[in-house]
Image (cartoon, rainbow, N blue to C red; front, side):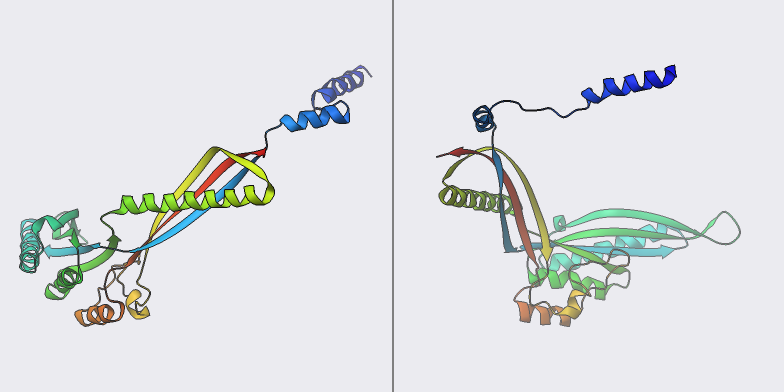
Length: 263
C-alpha cells in the first residue's frame, strides 16, 4: 500500500503547480487592472501597381556536336560569333550578349572507354529593349539550326523605384484604414510596430493571344525548351497589343500594429 500512498501524494503536489493563475479582487479593482492592460490592433494595407516592362532577357542555347571535342568547341564559337555579328548589324552591342552556362558532354558507345562524340552547349542571355531588337533576336532561332529558344524574363530598369512606390501606397492604404477606425470608433491609434511583404510578378499583355502565350513569350515550360514564335506571329502580337513586352506587377502588403487609446 505504500507505493499507492506515495503516488497519491505526488498527484497532490503536482496539481497546484499546474493550476491556472487567478485574478482576485473586487469588481472595481478588476476594472482598474484591465484598464492598464495594453490593447492593440493590426491594420493591413495593400497595393498593386502594373507597369509595362522596358526590357527583356531572352535565353538561347547553342548546341554543337562532333567526334572531336576541339571541333565541337570551335563550331560552337563560330556560331556564337555569327549570332553576335547579326545582332550587331541590328543595333545590339556585344555587351548585351552574356554567356550564362557552358557544358560539354562526351557520348560513349556500348563498348570501349573512348568517347564517340562530344556535345557542347552554351546558353546565352540577350537583353533587348524594344520590339525591333526582340524580333532580331527571334530571327536567330530561324537562322541557325543549332540555336534553340530557352525562355524569356521581362524586367524594368527602375524596378527598385516601383517597389518603393508600391510600398508607399500600401502604407498610405493602412493609414487611411486606421483613420477610418479612429473616426468611427472614437479612439486614438498609436503605431508601435509593423511588418511588410513585397512581391513582383510578371504576366502577359492582356491582349496576348492564347496560342502564343502557350508557345510562349513567357517561357513557362520548366522541362522542355519552348519553341519561340515565328516572325509572323510576333508581328500579329505587336499589332494587337501594341508591344511584345509583358507587364510587371509590383505588389506590397504592410501590417501596422497600433495601441488603442481613448480620445
